[in-house]
Image (cartoon, rainbow, N blue to C red):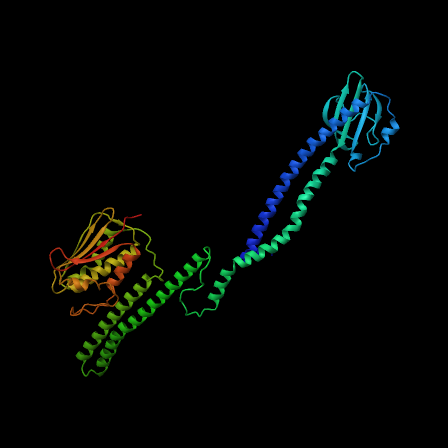
Length: 449
């Protein structure tokens, strides 16, 4: 539940990260301070033990009143955790504090030692006076030092316990104010009409929010352009389909009204030809729709341009022959290009189909030339009437057809070629054929990846 709450809210996530970071840093500082305080306490208290032992050795020359020593007042709450013993020659206990055990605290006669006595750990300092044969041992229960270090840790933790909720409230306010531009942008988007694709106007957004606003505005612009493109495409398609459908209806009416079989057969042949034209137009429209920005065709992949050129030539050979044209291919053994094979087929098919349609009657030959290399090149050259330079700028526009050609194409073939070239980062150039007449369409493909 907590993880879901944190994950679902940017504010909660920021608060959790900041407060968690503060807590971890504070705990780390407390651990370091605790270790440092414990080390310093050990140094200080070890010095105290050594100093106490030296003082007792100095003052232990005369007869000591055991009772007075044993019943000395405890002036500090830690005093009952400190004990001392005075031994004659290390064998006979001469005197000790009230909380000292009856046996020696440590077997050592000089220096520090840690021993276990009656279930407690003692830090013991021993000092031996060889002249008077007096052994003094001063010890302290280890738990006393732990208590001091614990008190230091509590002193460090207490402010954190108090400050963390206060810091959380302050951070919540700060994060809320910091996220205000995002909330304002969210409200602005939520209030929008679905048809409103105008850029978001949120004033001067913070530097961190500006990329989001820019990305949203860019998305709105792309969606708007795509919708406008589809609207225009639909209108153009409807307009282009209206004429062949009307012609089909007229031919069908002629067939119905025909008085003899010959006239009816001629009208029905016109209907079939019209159906073929409509089918071709619809196929081109569907291909172009798949190649549009919102389509699903991917340009990624590789293909052999020489192989595809030969395949396209083979499929169009009969159509070219029927129109009195010779279709040939000049290609190396292989020419690899960075284009999906299906897209390359469509591109070359439309170029060759265009050449077959418009070179017929005045031309005799169509050549597909493939040049291999780092950046392969494909040329489709015909010796037909060609296209005047002033009209070449419009080649590739949707539904654009040259007048006076006698052909009833869809006006989409070169649009499809240009679209595929854009998808594959290729370039298309329309030039006069090398013979001085006719058209040469050159496609430069990018270097294969």
